[in-house]
Length: 150
Image (cartoon, rainbow, N blue to C red; front, side):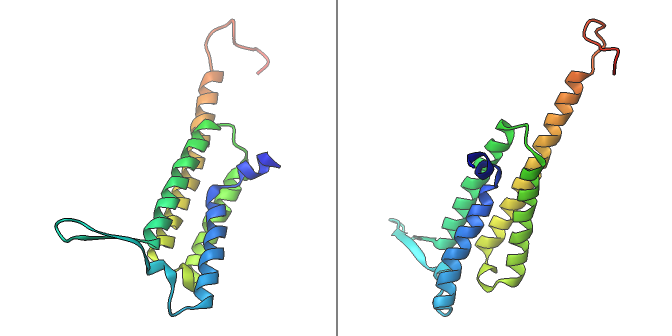
């Protein structure tokens, strides 16, 4: 069970959480949507106002998940094809939602969509690197190591 959950890309969980939070809040009151609201606002000594909105929070969350997924890819080089299929499926779901779902047509969701695409491509690249390394290790000119049955 735990292995199956670790195979599923974290962006899939982010997509589910985004749909639950944004969908509930959007359809409860579409005229007062939360994504553009300010979480915190600070005024600096030079009267410049720094405001942190939910858009930035979603982008930072996506960036943290991208970092975790990248580390996960390069630590687990023996990934199965199902992990790549899951990542591709999540990326396609992001694209479909961005096009067809009203509360997903914002910059935060688009940037998270791009992060999901980068995560999917990095998974393929890490698998190709691991396969290339395994292939180069298996080739040798040493007669002691070379097996005549191949």
